[in-house]
Length: 304
Image (cartoon, rainbow, N blue to C red; front, top):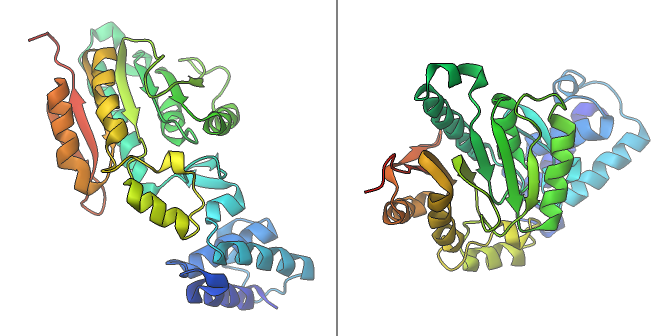
């Protein structure tokens, strides 16, 4: 069997939904990622190796991975990693698989933070501007660690209620954050949302669970592999946000910014929660598909 033959076989299996699954929406991509994993080579090299024969051991590894994927296991869990914001993050069943749409949350945080830095005294601007940033519901750490790597001077921390998620985020921090980072390490600790987080903060960035409970039940019943605690946001998906938004308002310094990812159908209700808590300049950022994905609000500079 050649590389080309293996890719065709894999795409057919995954596209047909064998082993009882509904089939992958990206069968050829999944097959190529799994075959490059089995070969231990980058995917771009794989596509140039079409006529090359495969060893029996490689075929066995590949077919075992295909079987897992056809049964519904995410590719990221099989590979043990997922690319996010240009970097590879360790992932497993203890955390949500990072989605490309969530990169918008990082981009919005960087822009909001840069704007805060521009508003400071001249000596506090530029690369030395040291903002205080916290992310609850950290999961794999892909959001806060991407922010930390893009803005090395910022003081970053993150928390989660799940010990397993904190373990994964800690492993990613150890692998990605330089020891000599100007802003220091990313501090990780257990907290139910912002219950034990100390302020004042300049930015709070969050991608909390926001799937409706009924939809979470349906996904898990179909064999969804991601943990319930990373998905289930209550009856309407906003149960955690109802607590998070006022908690963030109390911890933010005057002028500080809260950014929260949620579903498009939740954006208007989330903006109302922001306004009710006292945030001003509330707006929603759209992702590349034009869906309202990230809601932003600023704490007033002065009390009213």
